[in-house]
Amino acid sequence: MSFLISPEELKGLIGKDDVKLVDARRREDYLQGHINQAISIPIHDVIRALDAESLRKLFSSKGISQEDTVVVYDDEKGVYAGRVAWSLEYIGHKKVKLLDLSYSDLIKHEYYNNKISKEEEKFKEGKLDINLNESILANLEFVKGLIESRDGFIIDVRERLNYLEAHIPTAQTMPWKVFIGDKKLFKDADRIKRLLFNRGIMQDSNIVTYCGGAGTLSGISFYALRLAGFSKVRLYVRSFLEWKELNLPVEVVKDANYWDLSAY
Image (cartoon, rainbow, N blue to C red; front, top):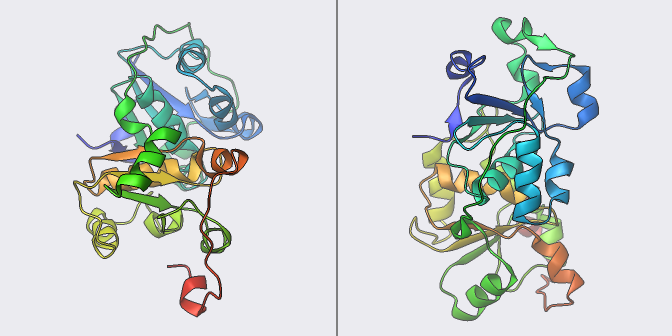
């Protein structure tokens, strides 16, 4: 079953007790208007939860339980929603979905435009367990091991200029926007697959995505690759921020030409 859910599919889920609609935008944006019954879990609260137990407490305090289907949305092309969804999956939640549309586009639909609320949703504390899904996490040691073994690929999803200035050794550049669609969250899965295949990255390759620091841009990229059928994808949550803080070696591209500076 796909982790993406369309606005049409969501219609049949809103209002069910075992469905939680999560608004990952900033709290001030949520209070200006959100989909009726959506729960506010701002991206910054998730980023500040630095371990599994902190994540469990955060999500359960917002009424999310183990058996719920959780649908996450934002208004940032999935950047916030992807990181929130990944965090739920990391602590072992099995029913996490991304809304295949941004909030601004969603409320253009008459059905949802009539369901905008400015009242905060009331909820009871949920019951969540921790069953860590280590297979989607790349920690520092995993990244170092991949560099040494060359048994996989590291993808830097920051803007191209950031990559040229400094990046993790052996990393390839694929700015996150190359995966993002115009009217839907992502480009067609086959198109994403071709982008990876053109780099020699196959669907059974070990892959790590990373960005500048909080794992947001690399989080939505993680889901783009999963959509295209790449099954061994991990997110380096601390990303380049940790790498630089530890003063680890970096690679630099000097004398970049026009194509190096282009979007892709």
